Length: 306
Image (cartoon, rainbow, N blue to C red; front, side):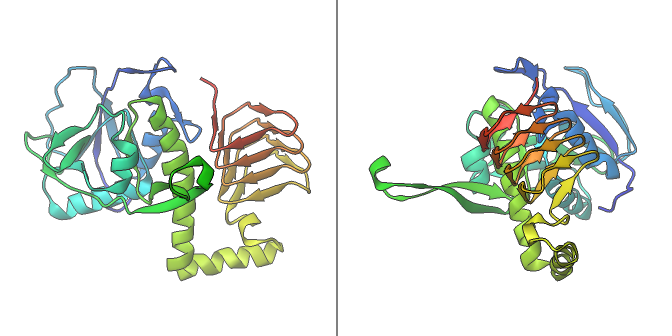
């Protein structure tokens, strides 16, 4: 579906409070944004108007195209584009399921989840597309998450029965229900930061125009590829010491100070953050207004104000 299509967005509530935050999923910060804001930004190109339903309310009667979803769902742009494109091609009511054999779902979505409905060898998520308004029945529309195995840590023989690498199943298209605190970690790190890195590598390997543009930016700026502005986005009014090393894909917000000798690799750093001298950050999300003291180290960590 192309951006600008007229669609009515209907948001279903998930009022359960997520421990230990004691907040509903919609208000939790995912990739340093409240979940409801992530949903709104990703769906903005497709939506003309919306309605949030109170708990137990019936779906409104309408004959226009509708996207209905539960407000505890985290999804990315790649998944929504694929789901809507295929649903519109089919031209009938569709619901998003997961295949029980999908490695990303099996390893990361399903454990501790309570929002999925079992249906044979699939599990249904609370995401629907109705081309002519809500109706009773919807066909399942399985979207391949395009998961790939990515290792992140080597296990010595004395720590395990078998030597090998710990791995994550990282999807290029993400959809997960936030039902427990561990799902926040999965959405931030595995589906978020690892997924962003995997998509970047995929574009470099498959998209010649993207690869040439990124290489040109690096050459023009006299930087290494992963340090160029094509993969490191820096906000306004930032003070970054020349000796700091920042490798992308990394996003740095506004009014950020990065001290001498700091190393930042594949992270999201929010606004008004102070990263002191010698800090080491890798695969981490640093929320707004955070102060990281001298030589602090974060690895696969989320620091967030609640």
